[in-house]
Image 1 (cartoon, rainbow, N blue to C red):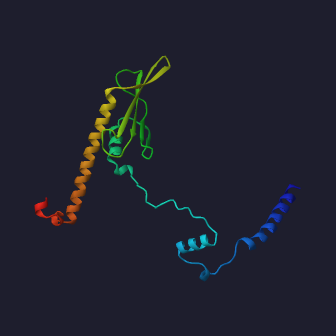
Image 2: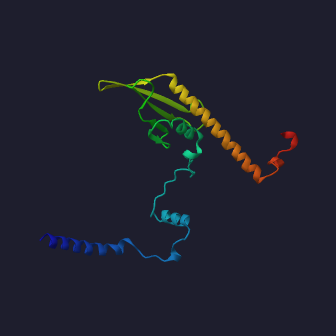
Image 3: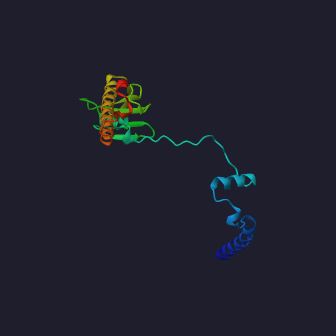
Length: 192
């Protein structure tokens, strides 16, 4: 009985839907419709067939990739001594796993690096260090403000600066290979 009801439902749906196609879709000739997309959109809007949202000028996005960002690469290389739990370039954050921060076996540290800018500046990074102290299966987690965060930030900024310097030197070498005269032809001698 179930199969018969299902068959009748499908048959009725096909009968009703086959009649709808004549009113919705009209065949059109190529000579009646513009080939250019902009012309076709304009024609459809004039005939009331479409909607257009003009949201301003179209611009391409700015795409920065982790391999091109010296600050990101320097952070990952500086924190390579500890496993990372989260390293999200698009989110601008690196979070390490808990690791033993010294001689004490019951004290672990976790480092979070937040990227506030892609530029190599002292205020481009925020380093947060958490401390977890465990005793008798009871753990207490605290945010610590110590010189560790400043030292990590300084190490990252130094490494990023060196990376940027090397990439600039490499770019200058490549450009000098293309123009053996060093590209000085556009700048007169007295203006250098």
